[in-house]
Length: 307
Image (tube, rainbow, N blue to C red; front, side, top):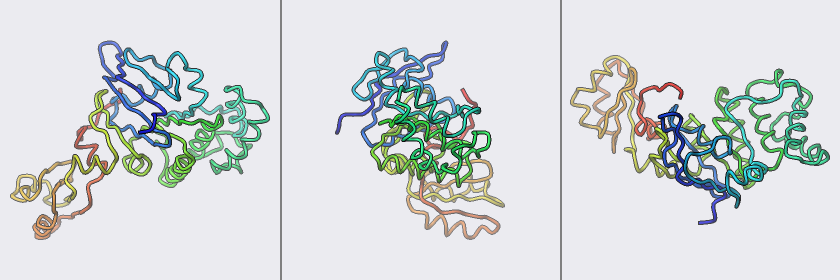
């Protein structure tokens, strides 16, 4: 294995009597996108903050780009780009001015920043909005501007905390396309997300957090194969919930209920689908197991509040 670009070892963080991150270790290889998934309160944002030196871990160590956090925090930050959950663009500046001012925070020469601005705006598909202020942009445009701003210092590593939250499907797909381009250019990415299709599309490897602990790690396909049955049949409509206590449940390895839908997890769905076809008024969906199934199996279906 190549030397990690970034490595966290046994990170722990407590707030009061609550352990938010509990013995977390992971690494990011050059050119890799590592995804961090988990329910609300799992410790994802606290982990990002520790990785950026914004929050000091109570225990553990972080090394990045051959440097050590927090001793070399400024030198590390100079080579890292960040897109946070919340919009931090300056509303008084145009798109181009936001990039210019942010570049000055890194001490970059004005001539270099001005040279980069057109390329960054083009990358973000915002060349036609160079003079527009953030308030004049759609949500997707603002997120792409935040990504362009994070690239102004030409970072080797990007840390993206739920970068597509609140975007419509078209805007999300455009962001995914831009992130794929960055990976093709050799950038490394640490990505937290609530979107399982996003994690599967972008991430070469995933860690699953719950209650501050890493409960699973691997490629998306490895995790699905390791933890799930390959076939899923969803049943909903008239009489669906009654199936939970019917003989049909024995045709599946595992049965779960969410709302009005019954999920049958099985090694081979043919016998189950034949049996379900006799239940008129019932609707079914047969599909392969996916990351959402993995997420729900490992962390549960109960909705959690933030924090």
